[in-house]
Image (cartoon, rainbow, N blue to C red):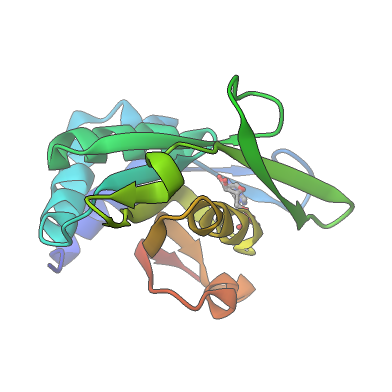
Amino acid sequence: MTMTPEEKQIILESIRDIPDFPKPGIVFKDITTLLSNPEALNTLMTHLENRYKHYNLDYVAGIDARGFIFGSILADRLGIGFVPVRKKGKLPYTTVAEKYSLEYGFDEVEIHIDAFGKEGMCNDKPAKVLLIDDLMATGGTAKAAANLVNKVGAECVEACFIMELMFLKGREQFEMPVYSVLQID
Ligand code: AMP
Protein backbone atom coordinates (compact mmCIF):
# COMPACT_ATOMS: atom_id res chain seq x y z
CA MET A 1 0.00 0.00 0.00
CA THR A 2 1.83 3.13 -1.19
CA MET A 3 1.26 6.68 -0.07
CA THR A 4 0.88 9.58 -2.46
CA PRO A 5 3.66 12.20 -2.42
CA GLU A 6 1.05 14.66 -1.08
CA GLU A 7 0.20 12.38 1.86
CA LYS A 8 3.92 11.92 2.62
CA GLN A 9 4.37 15.68 2.54
CA ILE A 10 1.50 16.24 5.00
CA ILE A 11 3.19 13.90 7.50
CA LEU A 12 6.71 15.20 6.88
CA GLU A 13 5.67 18.83 7.34
CA SER A 14 3.89 18.03 10.60
CA ILE A 15 7.14 16.86 12.27
CA ARG A 16 9.31 19.54 13.85
CA ASP A 17 13.13 19.54 13.86
CA ILE A 18 14.72 20.65 17.15
CA PRO A 19 18.46 21.23 16.64
CA ASP A 20 20.88 20.36 19.44
CA PHE A 21 18.38 18.42 21.58
CA PRO A 22 19.04 16.57 23.86
CA LYS A 23 22.69 17.40 23.17
CA PRO A 24 24.74 19.41 20.65
CA GLY A 25 24.84 17.89 17.16
CA ILE A 26 21.56 15.91 17.45
CA VAL A 27 18.55 17.04 15.41
CA PHE A 28 15.60 15.79 17.44
CA LYS A 29 12.55 14.81 15.40
CA ASP A 30 9.63 16.11 17.45
CA ILE A 31 6.44 14.16 16.74
CA THR A 32 4.27 16.09 19.23
CA THR A 33 3.36 18.43 16.35
CA LEU A 34 2.29 15.42 14.28
CA LEU A 35 0.11 14.14 17.13
CA SER A 36 -1.64 17.49 17.55
CA ASN A 37 -2.33 17.77 13.79
CA PRO A 38 -5.49 15.73 13.10
CA GLU A 39 -4.98 15.62 9.31
CA ALA A 40 -1.39 14.39 9.60
CA LEU A 41 -2.20 11.84 12.32
CA ASN A 42 -5.18 10.49 10.43
CA THR A 43 -3.21 10.28 7.15
CA LEU A 44 -0.43 8.36 8.90
CA MET A 45 -2.66 5.96 10.81
CA THR A 46 -4.86 5.24 7.78
CA HIS A 47 -1.74 4.42 5.78
CA LEU A 48 -0.47 2.05 8.47
CA GLU A 49 -3.90 0.46 8.87
CA ASN A 50 -4.10 -0.20 5.12
CA ARG A 51 -0.58 -1.61 5.04
CA TYR A 52 -1.06 -4.00 7.95
CA LYS A 53 -4.70 -5.05 7.74
CA HIS A 54 -3.87 -8.11 5.62
CA TYR A 55 -0.83 -9.23 7.65
CA ASN A 56 -3.04 -11.29 9.99
CA LEU A 57 -1.22 -9.85 12.99
CA ASP A 58 -2.06 -10.97 16.52
CA TYR A 59 -0.44 -8.02 18.35
CA VAL A 60 1.29 -4.69 17.89
CA ALA A 61 4.25 -4.15 20.25
CA GLY A 62 5.29 -0.52 20.82
CA ILE A 63 8.62 0.74 22.11
CA ASP A 64 8.79 3.08 25.14
CA ALA A 65 7.53 5.78 24.89
CA ARG A 66 6.53 7.22 21.51
CA GLY A 67 5.97 3.76 20.06
CA PHE A 68 3.15 3.37 22.59
CA ILE A 69 1.15 6.14 20.93
CA PHE A 70 1.32 4.95 17.33
CA GLY A 71 1.20 1.31 18.37
CA SER A 72 -1.95 1.70 20.46
CA ILE A 73 -3.84 3.55 17.75
CA LEU A 74 -2.81 0.99 15.14
CA ALA A 75 -3.69 -1.99 17.33
CA ASP A 76 -7.14 -0.55 17.96
CA ARG A 77 -7.68 0.12 14.26
CA LEU A 78 -6.67 -3.47 13.45
CA GLY A 79 -8.85 -4.87 16.24
CA ILE A 80 -5.91 -6.58 17.99
CA GLY A 81 -4.03 -6.19 21.27
CA PHE A 82 -1.18 -3.85 22.16
CA VAL A 83 1.93 -4.80 24.13
CA PRO A 84 4.40 -2.30 25.61
CA VAL A 85 8.17 -2.87 25.47
CA ARG A 86 9.41 -0.75 28.37
CA LYS A 87 12.62 0.68 29.71
CA LYS A 88 14.03 -1.30 32.63
CA GLY A 89 12.19 -1.27 35.95
CA LYS A 90 8.74 -0.08 34.79
CA LEU A 91 6.79 -3.30 34.25
CA PRO A 92 5.14 -4.76 37.36
CA TYR A 93 4.94 -8.49 36.56
CA THR A 94 7.69 -11.04 35.72
CA THR A 95 9.78 -9.75 32.83
CA VAL A 96 12.36 -10.83 30.29
CA ALA A 97 15.12 -8.28 29.59
CA GLU A 98 17.54 -7.47 26.80
CA LYS A 99 20.56 -5.18 27.05
CA TYR A 100 21.79 -3.10 24.16
CA SER A 101 24.72 -0.76 23.76
CA LEU A 102 24.52 3.00 23.50
CA GLU A 103 27.25 5.40 22.42
CA TYR A 104 28.50 5.23 26.01
CA GLY A 105 27.35 2.32 28.15
CA PHE A 106 24.21 0.19 28.02
CA ASP A 107 20.46 0.44 28.23
CA GLU A 108 17.91 -2.29 28.81
CA VAL A 109 14.35 -2.98 27.63
CA GLU A 110 11.84 -5.39 29.16
CA ILE A 111 8.64 -7.18 28.26
CA HIS A 112 6.21 -9.19 30.37
CA ILE A 113 6.95 -12.90 30.12
CA ASP A 114 3.29 -13.61 29.22
CA ALA A 115 2.82 -10.52 27.00
CA PHE A 116 1.60 -12.65 24.07
CA GLY A 117 -0.07 -15.38 26.13
CA LYS A 118 1.51 -18.57 27.48
CA GLU A 119 4.85 -19.13 25.71
CA GLY A 120 3.85 -16.55 23.10
CA MET A 121 1.41 -18.95 21.44
CA CYS A 122 -1.80 -17.88 19.75
CA ASN A 123 -4.06 -20.77 18.58
CA ASP A 124 -1.11 -23.23 18.83
CA LYS A 125 1.15 -21.02 16.67
CA PRO A 126 3.66 -18.33 17.66
CA ALA A 127 1.78 -15.01 17.86
CA LYS A 128 2.48 -12.73 14.88
CA VAL A 129 3.73 -9.40 16.17
CA LEU A 130 4.43 -6.06 14.50
CA LEU A 131 7.01 -3.95 16.31
CA ILE A 132 6.61 -0.17 16.07
CA ASP A 133 8.50 2.95 17.12
CA ASP A 134 8.58 6.58 16.02
CA LEU A 135 12.15 6.61 14.74
CA MET A 136 15.03 4.28 13.91
CA ALA A 137 18.48 5.76 14.44
CA THR A 138 21.13 3.05 14.99
CA GLY A 139 18.42 0.40 15.31
CA GLY A 140 19.82 -0.83 18.63
CA THR A 141 16.63 -0.25 20.62
CA ALA A 142 14.37 -1.91 18.06
CA LYS A 143 16.72 -4.85 17.60
CA ALA A 144 16.69 -5.49 21.36
CA ALA A 145 12.88 -5.16 21.39
CA ALA A 146 12.54 -7.63 18.50
CA ASN A 147 14.78 -10.08 20.35
CA LEU A 148 12.47 -9.79 23.38
CA VAL A 149 9.37 -10.56 21.30
CA ASN A 150 11.07 -13.68 19.98
CA LYS A 151 12.45 -14.62 23.43
CA VAL A 152 8.95 -14.89 24.90
CA GLY A 153 7.91 -17.26 22.09
CA ALA A 154 6.16 -14.94 19.62
CA GLU A 155 7.28 -14.07 16.09
CA CYS A 156 8.29 -10.52 15.21
CA VAL A 157 7.18 -10.32 11.55
CA GLU A 158 8.22 -6.71 10.78
CA ALA A 159 9.68 -3.62 12.42
CA CYS A 160 7.87 -0.40 11.50
CA PHE A 161 9.02 3.19 12.02
CA ILE A 162 7.51 6.54 11.19
CA MET A 163 11.02 7.83 10.40
CA GLU A 164 14.31 6.16 9.48
CA LEU A 165 17.65 8.00 9.65
CA MET A 166 19.14 6.44 6.51
CA PHE A 167 22.73 7.56 7.11
CA LEU A 168 22.99 5.40 10.24
CA LYS A 169 22.14 2.22 8.25
CA GLY A 170 20.26 0.75 11.22
CA ARG A 171 18.23 -1.63 9.05
CA GLU A 172 21.35 -3.63 8.13
CA GLN A 173 21.33 -5.41 11.48
CA PHE A 174 17.80 -6.79 11.03
CA GLU A 175 17.11 -10.17 9.47
CA MET A 176 13.36 -9.51 9.43
CA PRO A 177 11.63 -6.95 7.17
CA VAL A 178 11.93 -3.29 8.16
CA TYR A 179 9.45 -0.65 6.98
CA SER A 180 9.66 3.12 7.38
CA VAL A 181 7.10 5.71 6.32
CA LEU A 182 9.63 8.55 5.92
CA GLN A 183 13.29 8.17 5.01
CA ILE A 184 15.48 10.99 6.33
CA ASP A 185 18.84 11.58 4.59
P1 AMP B 1 18.32 3.79 18.16
O1 AMP B 1 18.32 2.69 19.18
O2 AMP B 1 19.68 4.40 17.97
O3 AMP B 1 17.70 3.35 16.84
O4 AMP B 1 17.43 4.97 18.74
C1 AMP B 1 16.07 4.90 18.63
C2 AMP B 1 15.34 5.50 19.81
O5 AMP B 1 15.86 6.78 20.16
C3 AMP B 1 13.88 5.70 19.44
O6 AMP B 1 13.06 5.33 20.54
C4 AMP B 1 13.78 7.16 19.10
O7 AMP B 1 12.56 7.69 19.56
C5 AMP B 1 14.97 7.82 19.80
N1 AMP B 1 15.72 8.73 18.90
C6 AMP B 1 16.98 8.55 18.42
N2 AMP B 1 17.38 9.56 17.65
C7 AMP B 1 16.35 10.44 17.62
C8 AMP B 1 16.14 11.71 16.96
N3 AMP B 1 17.06 12.27 16.18
N4 AMP B 1 14.94 12.30 17.13
C9 AMP B 1 13.98 11.73 17.90
N5 AMP B 1 14.12 10.56 18.54
C10 AMP B 1 15.30 9.91 18.42
